[in-house]
Amino acid sequence: MNNRMLAMLAYAGTLPFVGSAALTIFGIDTVPTLGSGPQIAAAWALTIASFIAGVHWGQYLSNGARAGIMLAIVSNAIAILGWLAFLALPLRFALLAFAALFAILLLIDRRLHEAGFIGPGYWRTRLGVTLVVVAALLVTAVFA
Image 1: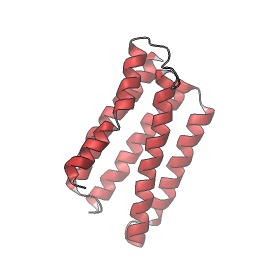
Image 2: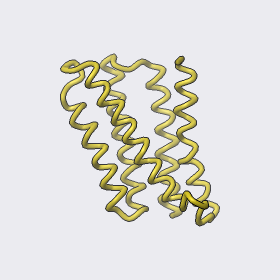
Image 3: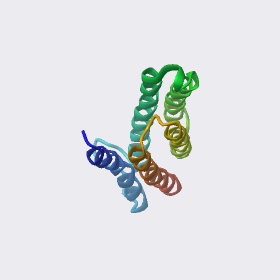
Image 4: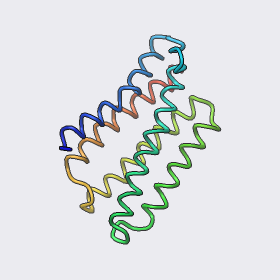
């Protein structure tokens, strides 16, 4: 799969975040079978944060000691923290926690990029996608 296709898939993954923010801004309380905008955003955030943590785990498995054991530990910690935020926090605070987790995941990717583990195209995509996701989560939390 080429970089353009990967970028398109990554940006498509922002649609549930942007849609949830729009639902919340416009006061649409629920979407049948899916729930409220904040509920949709939190569930999708858990999914995507876990996915990105899995990508980091994969980087550790592929690169071992060169990537550092902390990458494996932090990737697991982020998945667990996301799960706990989803289950234990009031929805507004869970959304804020996910915004913070996505920022942390981006910082990890920046380090992976600087170390040469991920290329410039992937880094640019992650940066753009994360900005959209964090903004949408913050908007959803404010209007929730």
